[in-house]
Length: 318
Image (cartoon, rainbow, N blue to C red; front, side):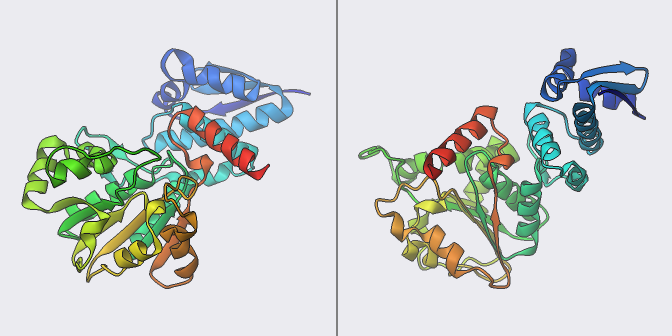
């Protein structure tokens, strides 16, 4: 049965954002839902098979909600909304509204782009220790750094400490040249990249010099008590049980910890000794500790990253 639905849009600027440059988003929507979408004044007209039209109408309403929240629309957003519509959860998109986490040096507002990311940020806000578990591209590290920068700029903490285990991803790099900082920098580069984004290179360098921002390998945490700090442990799937226990017990007064990792990408020689999977099992149910799992639906990188994750999961199941 052929159906046509009309959706009035109050703000013509929202229509321009929805359709995208050269109607790129409009063309994607028409392909995804197999419908024809036209605009007449401030009305959107959607026609096609009844089920397709109803799905497309839900998607457009959800996209308008996202646009009202200040977001631009790109391929990732279109794919995420499509998945939500197909699962009958498009109405939950309204939960993505609200302010951003922080603003980058370039003036970009950082916001959660999926419901999984929003729950992750909420967990960080209310918990002393948060474990963020999920595949590559879900924003685990970037959003944790954004939360740390927000807490730092609001004077909730006096320093940011970022660390990760110095484990090579299946390669042997051999001896690296330079002093200790030069040797560990390659392992910590993703953390530097996120901080450059938030602060800008010059401000970041000043904070590093004053030691209000510290980026160090996990081994350097032993024996310390980290008060008044926001501490992030990245790539935690490469910690041993002993390292994880050592790290978690560094928590001091007025401090917050975020542990991020992807348990499908361990580089440990003995996966049975993984500190992250151990912590997920042992710490479950403790007040003040929150475990948040992100999935391939929360991937905000290139579409192929989502497809690659699904393909590997399917292969492992078979």
